[in-house]
Amino acid sequence: MHDAFKTSLENTLKERMTQDQLIFHPVSSEWDNRRNRAVDRALKAAAFRYNASLEEIDYSFERGLDRNRADRLAALKFIRESKDLFITVPTGTGKSHLAAALGYKARQDGYRALYASTAKLMSSLKIAKVKGTILNEFKRIERTGLLILDDFAMQTFDSQSRGMLMDIIEDGHRKWATIITSRIPVKARHDATGEKTVADAILDRLAHHSLRVELYGESIRKRKNKSEISFS
Image 1: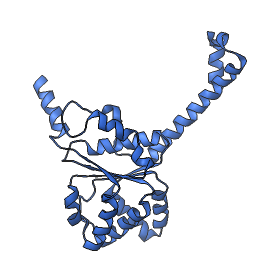
Image 2: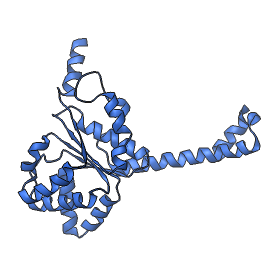
Image 3: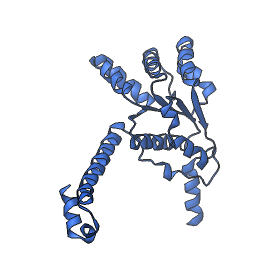
């Protein structure tokens, strides 16, 4: 506030301000600074895999995602309605980038977001269970408005992981939104999830009341490499 007030005194800005405006300027600056610092802290706590933004998405080639659809997702209506979002893609077509970009947008709009590689999350929960701190981990997840499970079902879940995943999905059903990214088609996730009864319960809660984005096409990295070669 001191810096903002000093700046307004040192330039011609003060000459065009009323006394009320002269006071409002440093207060407004402090508010903006605090909000920006809070967003920065929130982004670090979310532990996103990528520094991604929706403005960086490339729409120059066909892959099942156009600007209009991305803008609708960016409105975050699915978070307000506690709906889940499936992003199914081949390797390299931008699933994690899109999920992280939506997570960044959610944090900037004031939602709590938490990113996790699904396999790493299951491993950390197993360690927490051994340490006796698993309830704290579940509470951390429960406080979120958006949970991002990246690379879902890349490995077959064992019985302990299925149980913990079921607890997360059950607790979050209609309470928070979950973005799930996977290279495995929705119809094939039953086998990857494992034991039939638990798999049915998990996928039933995830599949209903959810949105889907199915990307396709060649890897973005391959496209970029081809472009660099063609111009070299």
